[in-house]
Amino acid sequence: MLSMVEYVHERMHTYDNLEIGVDFTMGNGHDTKSLIECCKEVYSFDIQEEALKRTKELVGDQAHLIRDSHENFDHYVDAFDIGIFNLGYLPEGDHNITTTLDVTQRTLIKAVEHMKKVIFITCYIGHPQGKEEALWIDNYVSDLDTHTYNVSSFKMMNKKNAPYVIEIERK
Image 1 (tube, helix red, strand yellow):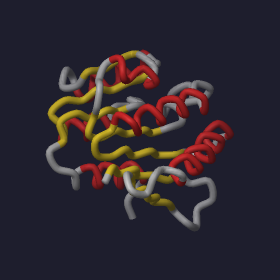
Image 2 (cartoon, helix red, strand yellow):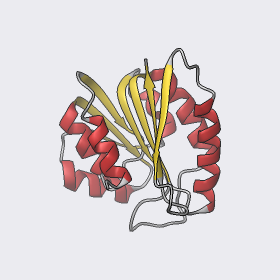
Image 3 (cartoon, one colour):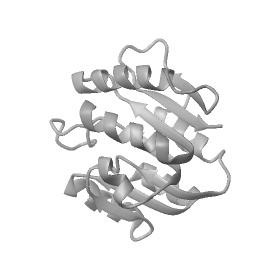
Image 4 (cartoon, one colour):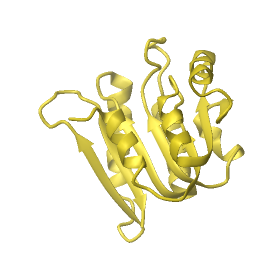
C-alpha cells in the first residue's frame, strides 16, 4: 500500500494542464519536486531556513522557494491549479516548530477560494497540534458546498494516529 505522500504524488499526476502549483509546507522539498514534474510554475513556502536549504538542494532553481508563512501565499500568486499541505513539523527538524491551527485555518480558507482544481492536505494526528488541526479541517471540508466541491479522504483504518489525506476538488 502507498504511503500518504506517495498517494498524493500519484493522485496529483491524474490532473491535466496544471499551470501553477503551490506547496504550502515546503519541508524537505519532496512535494515541491513532485509539483515541478506536473506544473509549469511552482511556489513553495516555509518559515524555516533549513527547509529552504534542503529543498534548494533537491530542486535547485526549478521553483519559487519562499521563506514566508503559507498564510501569505496570496501575496505571491493570485490563483493556482493544485496545492499541497503536508501539515505538522519538518522531518528531522525541530518538532517544537509546527503548523498551527490559527494559521492553517486562515490559509486553508483562502486557499480554497483561490484554487482552480485541487488541494491535498496530509494531516498528522500523532501530536496534539496535529489532532487539533485535523479536527477543524475535517469539520471545515465537510461543510464545503457539494455543488462546487468534491471532498474525499484516504486513510489507514487499522492504524491508530496514522496520518491521512484529504482531497478537495473543485467541480
